[in-house]
Image (cartoon, rainbow, N blue to C red):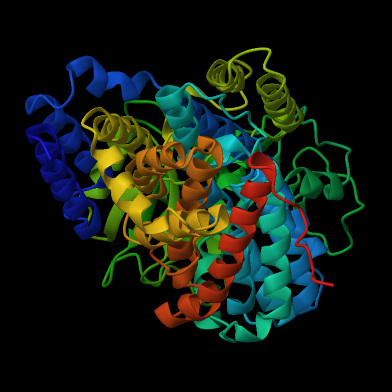
Length: 601
């Protein structure tokens, strides 16, 4: 073992310690590894910085923007609500519908985004159907992880694996659907396993946490149908449909009087006021809708003063606040603070039909509209606990068909190899911004910079492992053990090692660390490198063993009231099945193995 290998192993050990201990963020750790490789002379600066211009980094950033476009136009939300409706009332049907549908959504978007989007939908579905939430959330999170195996671009690990195959041995790279047969098999196996073994899932409703979680997404406000509105003379049902069922109407005022005789089929008229509950995103969409206005803003906009552009913020009523017990009408914020109360959220308890009649309580959250100079005064007022920007973002639902078209064309161009995949996805991301499916600020926010930087930073780790001969050294040691083993067994070993390591490291870092070893091992065995690297990446992506192995599992841990042992009890047999399926399918795809086992007799 020469000095370069010793230096590399020392840097690797330090990096592994930081990755596993999480003393620093993963992207910071990746940058420290990159700098250490350059400063010790293991890599040249050009080699160390090559990851930032690499195909995996470009595609990952573009996929984030495409996902942001689908979210901004309400496409993912609509799909999620359709899944909730199709799931029906029975547990088995919910799992049978939910898992393939969620896997399909995760094929071209980030799986954590899909999990986060489906979480409130499934919690609401479980409550309405009186099903334990814990029986649905784990299958959903598993399906989102399995869905990343349906295309090459949905998980960074596969992009990194493809980059290694092309860069290291000049072998033919993977196309966007190369791993799809394996992904389809895994989705079928995972869905079948959850249907047959659903009795292993815990029965915990999570209702006491769920109600509060859902109510965070319901703000009470009033809508005014403005003059010349596109909604005038159209039935209320059309407005509700346009906002994807996320708009709950509690009352209808016409000429200042409540009208009980008006129904969903009744036409809206100019000047009508709707008393509604809406999610944060819907509240922003309603505020931006040219045919509607938030009633309070329409009435008191002329009383707003101050400097800066108008914006929405949120303020929490503090304990002991002088506002407690007083109605919004009595407080007259427009006159006293030169801001408008446009909405109200309350954790518990009912609200009167008219927003102005609501008497404030400790912990109430007010949605305020005004100018920044006035917000500075409110932030310093002892009556409020905090003042933060409003979290909602307007949905651009009219552009949903355009967003879907851009995604379809992007995939078609990449799959048909009319353009290189990085260029095709970059073009798709730019098209999302240019056509205003998502604005530039949202597009940048959609990109998880930590993942982008981590990928760019860990790619040189794999290069260094190859250049220093460490990959050959480790693969030769492994070769002495598995030299006489069947190829299927060797693939299972690689999957197993990756599955264990990914529980404490990211899938990208695991693939970069083990990929060069898999490459060198395949070459030593005289086998094609592709199945060895792909199976290693699969082990890093779909090992469903612990709640810390995947970010999606962490999202469902609290709402589903899961314990660590729940994931191990369900995930261990499932991971064994996934490993066998992955290795068998890889052997069939790239090594000429049989698709179906040969039964004796």
